[in-house]
Length: 238
Image (cartoon, rainbow, N blue to C red; front, side):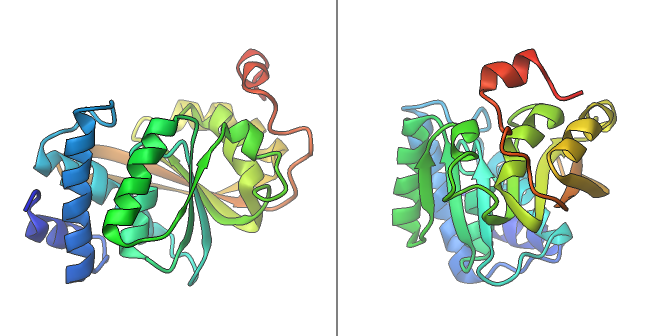
């Protein structure tokens, strides 16, 4: 066993998330593969089992305490990296139709190994977010769009909101210090068809403060967004 599954079970239960034995076993295998692959490619700076439980697994799962996707909801994790929060959400909710998007092929190869080893299904998409957001197969197709530790909220909104369907949610996992970032992002969120519904602030044990802006897609995103990444950086939506 790689992780303390009882610590994970009780930690998740504090967020009203019940993990059965299958889920706990899958999380243990996930941690083992993360440690193994991290020796070959840079996936995470958090390498100790307890840190993986709190700062990756529970940090990702906490999202489900504030947002309850419908059965078989379509979810996309933008810039998924080592699979957080996407794969963690899928372990807790195997019914989700998950797409894991990342521009780094090696990370997706890791995630494909994880999915295969855990007996789970998800789409892995090797593409830049601004390119995928202009594809009809992905544009405005998702009930839930999420991302963790990817970019500032203003730019991240341009990458992510085009994926959300009308009535869908964009829920990026952010740090406690979100207020200046949120103020800067308000114009972009509105221009892209979103509206901040609420801002959840909470603490992760041994992980510090967190923020979860819950942004509702209330109108279609203009076809001109998302722009190429160079433009997003040079001419931010302010």
